Length: 399
Image (cartoon, rainbow, N blue to C red; front, side, top):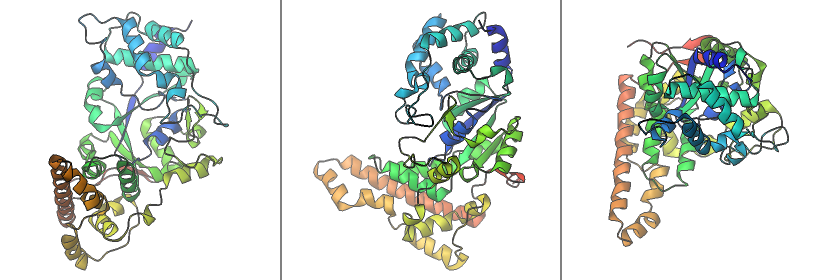
């Protein structure tokens, strides 16, 4: 039997980092998967909305919560994490060199470990999270005693406040993708749905959601998706996290098994790890972001591209500002999908006036947001977040 008391104490004393994402399919799962097999990292199988579970669970809402019932509810809700063949979206039923393996944890063993680790501990969210992480890693045979860091993938920045109540001293790391590629990815996936405001909401999330984290006293930093395979940069990431660089960071795995990307990935036939990682980051945005759309996007965000080291077509300030001011109201590609008569008129004929007004509302919001970006460029108050480079961390100037 494992020494539950010693294991819990070890886990509870690990420094913690929370990983978040700024949208645009920025490679958050790919980045997390690089740390999955690192011997000094204690982590879980992908994104885990633990505090959402704790707040929403029926077993934690009663006056006298029962540990066994909470463990059972956690297992039921997260069955796809413990038996990854059920995680269809992330294709975790196709792990391993031959894409024929999956994580298959004995649920009774996981439950036993979780309850054993909680013995003589206060039943609260923080202690239960330590027990879940300890139990998972005991089940997959990860060397817990060697770990130096608890890596928690919370994904959504809006979920940070509840997490930080339990872990106020945690570092926070986010992935970043070339905004053009991220924008195209967001739009393409949004086109599968029917929400005319997604373009506006997603773009604001990509550009603004993490700005408040700059003031976290050096505990927040960004790693570009393009740099996942750069050893010098990953060494700097490891130094910041307080762990050593390990060759495991060159491979994407879950539960120690090779991962081939999620269901939206189309390069699973590439066997070479580096070539696979390179291919999975591209979406050929150059052939999709064209004309007025590309001009506005690149001109309004040119200082942001420059800050992060992404090349753009240099557009002179004049006539750039003049052209942008005139062209911003022009419907961009995503606007046109919803404003197109063949889309809008059938809604009106069905009496769906509210939906048509919703389309117009978000079209106006997009225009106002673009003018806001234009004003920011004029004022020099564009988005700049600290990010890892080969020389360390590039930090924005203090206002």
